[in-house]
Length: 109
Image (cartoon, rainbow, N blue to C red; front, side):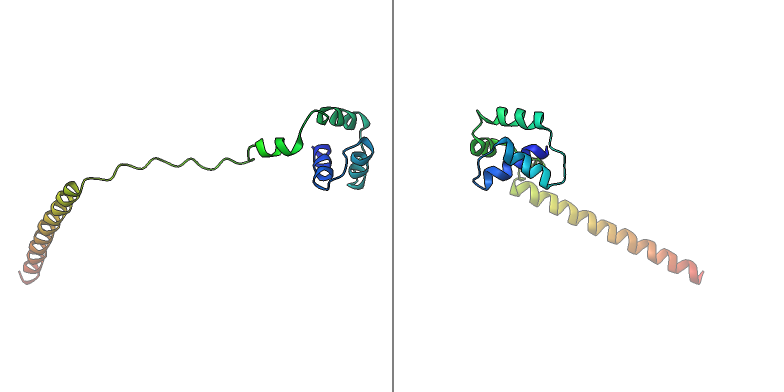
C-alpha cells in the first residue's frame, strides 16, 4: 500500500512517477524498497489515468442508509386519534380520583 501512496504523492505533487522517485519516497519513509513491487506498480500505472480513477473511486465508508418514513397520516385520522387519547385520559383521571377517595376512607375507618 505504501507504494501506491508514494505514487499518489508524486502525482499530486506534479512529479513524474518513476522507479527512482517511488523508491526515494519509500526509503525516505524508512522502509526497504522492493524493486520488484516498484516495477510492477509503474507497469500497472502506465495505462491508468490517475485523476479519472480518483474521481471514480468510492469512499472508504458508506453512509448509513436512510430508513423510509411512514406516510403522514390524514388530518382526520390524527384528529380521531387525539380525541380518543383525550377520552382515555379523562376516564383514567376519574378512575384514579375514585381510588384516591377510597384510600382516604379507609384511613378514617
